[in-house]
Length: 509
Image (cartoon, rainbow, N blue to C red):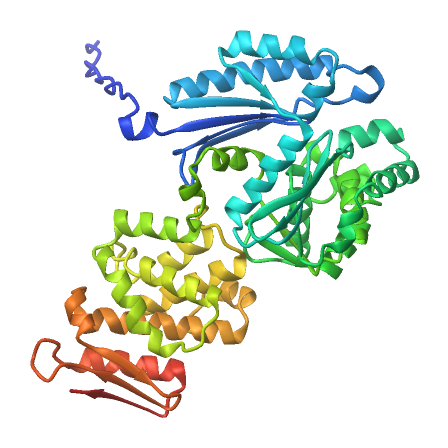
């Protein structure tokens, strides 16, 4: 009998403590809502906070609150267990601070103080019980932090309440909290749709300023995000990302009319509907249906940002809140991953001649593209265009609407040599109008030409300039050999000329 083989001992992995850049910067926010309890840990208290951890449970604390006046007992047990877990996870991740926020159900229930005391005992953290106006204000700040140009009305639908806030000129104006969360509505109506509709009408009649809203409606909250996913699936939308997802008013009205009348069995047959949302989704659709009847909004733009992001935003300095989140994200990427982050201002000046009279938002996107123009260099050359397009389309730290995301993606796709006829551009084509796509191609090919012209040297770019009169395209270079011409320069200049549909192109010393 042979002796058993000796098994070499495997050395344990060394213990790794969170680094200073991780633990000291991370902040956590727990939202204790009427239906859900969620922990989100962000990578820092900054203008563009990125979630590094996100977990949610649905204990339904507010279920039956109208009749009993108390938090649901089963929900309390689940919530306490989950909150204790969340606090432990946050400590393990080395978060600098953890804030626990309680909303409608906790502030209204007779046993809310008892629940809060037990949460604080188990978690070792104080709980902030938000008033209705404060909850509305923070949710509105969350929307404004992610969509700085938002104008219209924000609606944040939780399990127990609906917060409505009028947005204008990057500020939250009038606001109101209404008892229209799906859990509350189910208790009030006893499951009767007509009674629920009458109750919603009665509550919304208290908000006369809704009729004055003519800009967008910004829905926030898990149930309304479920409606956005339904619409994406129904229309075969190519980009499954809630934030910045826009729907024309007529399509939104058709969607909510349909869903608000569906039963639980019908919804269960729709694959994209979470089983946990089967009861609440029709009532959430009913509230949105009634809200759309009262506003003059032309479109609906969903926001993935709300209370938690507003809480972070509210803790920044006034100077930090004024920063453009798109520029901040681009600056961060460029500093971390670009070879020539200093080149962006020169690129902005150099490409300006191609886009006279551009709008403020077009200028914002061009400046962002110049900042991002070198972040794909680490990818293999054969895959740079493809990889950078996917990254821009899917990056969560870009706070933009989907057509703007597609524009930036197509710019960088062309900057790295992608062709307009390539496969894999279906998403971009679906999200961009033809004139915007042409502009993106022109800007991308111009950036590609810029790097060939100067090799990343700012001085070389400053010594050259483009001239475009609508017909002829010219690249002026110094008469000496500091910026030598060559086949690569000539080829890329011609590619730009083709994108601009120029009649001629020439390099001029």
